Length: 445
Image (tube, rainbow, N blue to C red):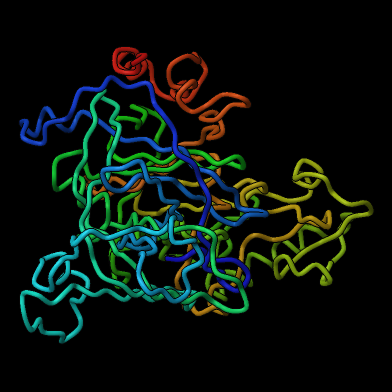
């Protein structure tokens, strides 16, 4: 689903390319499958929940060195980039738009058909291009044609790959008013539908059908494949697809505040990196907010309706500088998944609060029913911070483990330096057996 804020703002992100110290062996896609899947692709992220409101990744497309910035969205399948064509809603200069090279898919391609399972469109000829149109929950949309091009990847087994990926070349975009168009080039669709990038990569045997992300206030990282998953310490719950399409959903779940059940069971929960904040249906939201307000009685916080950063904000006797100033005023939340033993996500105050530019503290859980999400409950970026979240499509499960995701980018140290040099760098969160393996494959070129 799209990036969401107070009015479900459709935002896209900002990122940069990076050089990793891999060997330059070229991955042969003709190798035996068992040889090809001992690998992952890792990308650094930029962004934050507040004030930017998005996380993004930079990925190269084509034979050149052109990198495009994508908002990461585990709530949608199709990856699309702004197209160098007569364009509506495109904000990038022409030199930063994707230039197709007679590589549009025709209407009969299977991936084209997968985008219109509920329509009655009939392809008229082999020359007909595959058009797509996607509408997001924030009422934004993208219209264009499907194309196919190389996406160079640096893999953790020391190899390079250049699989041809199908994605959208968009030329007509709409964004939710009154917000201005986003500054990025498109959306990286991380869902589990046929056209998603992880589904395509796994079908070609480049990586396993597993992806994950680790978000922090300074960015974080995203990965395709299963090589970064710790061998222990991960909590897992099974995926559920009842009536919610290809979203990463788990259920049933129950919410607790300060160790006390909110009182509503069997919640359907979606994990969505395309949502800045967490959304609960009206009934759950009202219960949680009432419990929070009751718990704040007698504490030095007053309502701050003048701060419109989020619907619910509080001010103190002095402006707050960080969440450290207020976290002791709030109790933790937790999501307990009743179908999985000992499977619970703990949400400390810093994963559902923000400090605004005005020095107030605001409630980063919003009413999803009011913005058109119905009874759907969405766990957004704010509540996924400092957790490695894993979507294992092969085993049909979602996992998470708490960690400091900012380790992957240290001050004045590039991503590649952390991989090659730092004992306490990005892979210090992984288990020992993987570090032994990593020492063999992460080496200077």
